[in-house]
Length: 285
Image (cartoon, rainbow, N blue to C red; front, side, top):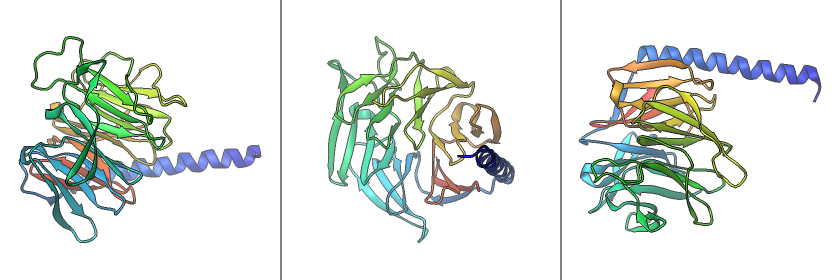
C-alpha cells in the first residue's frame, strides 16, 4: 500500500466518523423516539435475528416477542413458565440468559431450551444477566446478584469457550451488567452498574480477555456498538441513553429516558431500545 493511498484511506475513515457523529448528535438532539411494541410492564434483551426481525424479552410475562420491522407488527415467539432475560443471535443460533434458573441457554425452538452453563467450579451462578457471542463462537456473559442472597465470592463475568469450557473473566466488578464486543471479535466491553464505570478488554486469539482498561466513567445496563465504534449505553441510574465515542468520551445523551438495553436493526441505522411499556425505535444515521 502506498503512503498516499494509506493517508487517503485514513482521511476517508476519519471523515466518515465525523459525519457519523454529526448525524448521531443531531438525531439524539431531536430524540424522535417512537414506540413500536407496547403492552409490557418491563422489557429487556433485544437482538436482531437472521430474518431481520427484532426479538426482545418481557420477563415479567415470561415471554419473548418478535417485532417485524417490515410489517411493523409484533407476535409471540415464546410464552412459558420461566422468564428469559437477555438474548443474542449469532450464526442461526439464539442464545439467552435465564436469571431465575441461574443459567445460560441456547434456544433451539420456542419449545426447546438447552443449558450451556449453570455453574462455575461447582457453585451455581448468581443471576446471569446480559450476554454477547463473538464471531468465533465464544459466549461472554455477566452474572450480577440482583435480589439473591449475597454471593460469597463476589460478582463476575464469564466466558463459555466454543468448546464449552467455562472460565471466569479475571477482573473485579461491583455489579457487572451490560456486555458487548466488536464485530471482529477483538474487543470486549463490560459495564459495571454497581461502580458506574465501563471497561474495555482486548481479546486474544483464544477469546480470553486481557487486562481491564477503564473506558468511561459511565456505567449502566445493556449496550451495543455501531459501525463507527461508538458505544450506546442504557443508564437507568441517570435515566438516560448515552452515546460514547471510541475514545471513551460522551458524544450525546437523551435524558429522562431510562432504558434497559439496545441493539441495531438490519442496516445499522435504527437503534431499538427496550424500555417500558415495550420496544422503542430511534433513527441514529
